[in-house]
Length: 345
Ligand code: PLP
Ligand code: COI
Image (tube, rainbow, N blue to C red):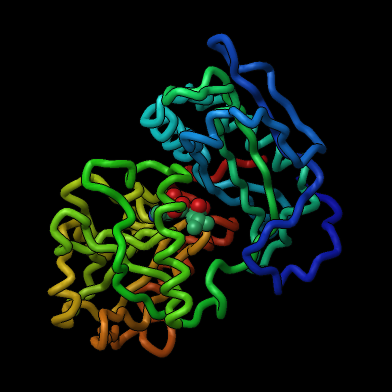
């Protein structure tokens, strides 16, 4: 859907909330979702006893919409967000929002806000944030009797300040996710857990934390808001796995694994120890996610120790650059979408 765009400084957007024209809402009560639809209202009014306020029943998603060179608007694999939101909701005893309706709702709210989808080539995108909360009243610990599903959209630029400049991480002191806990779902409670760590990291001059597995503190898991990828000295893309199912199944990461195969790269999805990272096994490191896209990591610190990734220390390394260019090219239509990942609005 082509059309006039809003008058924003698209190339200089940061990752911040800016209300747009429409959001999408639907409510669940007595066993079913209502018809749902667009709204110009960007606030939610709730009882003081709503489940979200007391027992943190909230799950969310994140995806983006892009303008392609011909002015069309597309989203990237919204079906996987729909599926992951279902999994997240089930884990927290919330009713799933039907996956087909999720995709339709994303299309409807993006189409209604077409003027807010950043133009092709701007480097920005429309961030789509579906979320669901326990809106019904509970006082004893129990699932809420009613739920509110909502999609807000907002135009965004890069997640990390400095765009493509390699960032520094540090090993977190606190854990993000318990073994076999909720690390593998997208629930607000995981992010509340990481806020103290994140702010401590920022105060110490780091962009983010890298979390080790909380059971043994041996294996690399992920950061507070993105999965982590490495490139080893043989040029293989190494993707950390978890023994305790505490890594969020990133849609960007799953897509990059396929992109890497398409590019003829070797990919190894395996357990990665922090020791091997310290011993210099990897030449490049990057964070991947909807918000992060691929953000290069130059260094990871633990106390006085700094591990540096030689091929990607001063600027993004060649493998991460190739992966990033291919993925973003697919996402904005510049590279052929051989997998059928784009959904046209
Ligand atoms: N890991 C965490 C903890 C996240 O919050 C996100 C963001 O969505 C990701 C990984 C990346 O997932 P995706 O690529 O599906 O956005
Ligand atoms: C996303 O990438 O969509 C997320 O939800 C991560 C968050 C840290 C912004």
